[in-house]
Image 1 (spheres, helix red, strand yellow):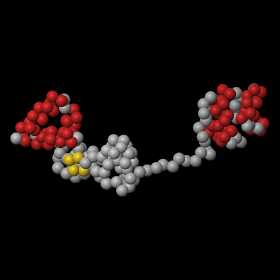
Image 2 (cartoon, helix red, strand yellow):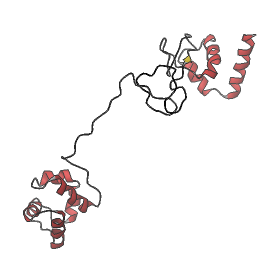
Image 3 (cartoon, rainbow, N blue to C red):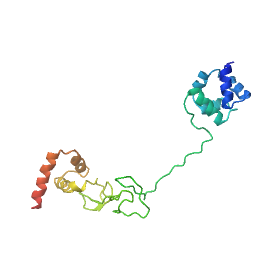
Length: 185
């Protein structure tokens, strides 16, 4: 049977363990601080030695392992908060908008338009968000709307236009802008 040293027993007593609890610890084969480190955590110690309470097991394991014990058994479950589908966050500062928020309103935190309203290059409708609510096309930045319309007229697929604009080098965009200006005249 493994036995703790007198010093280790005195430390356990200082942590709040009784003689009976120390005997229970030794009874499961724990004979040193190193054995407690092998146990690993307060929850496992509680499973091995049911005579201990959660607070005492945590204090013993904090001493044995040198790291703070994770709260066990007595900890209350953390409530999970889930936002509804109508919750809107500002695209600039990520602040939650009030319940009476309407598309196009300014953010209550930063003062910018919380959900910018953009036009769709594919179907022409407008609305907030990253995708068109009518046709599902990914919306492009307003400054590149004319370029996206031109690429659409050239026959690029709906999903390819935003991707192509993101990867297009500036000199190629300049060439497209000259073509857009030509069509406007």
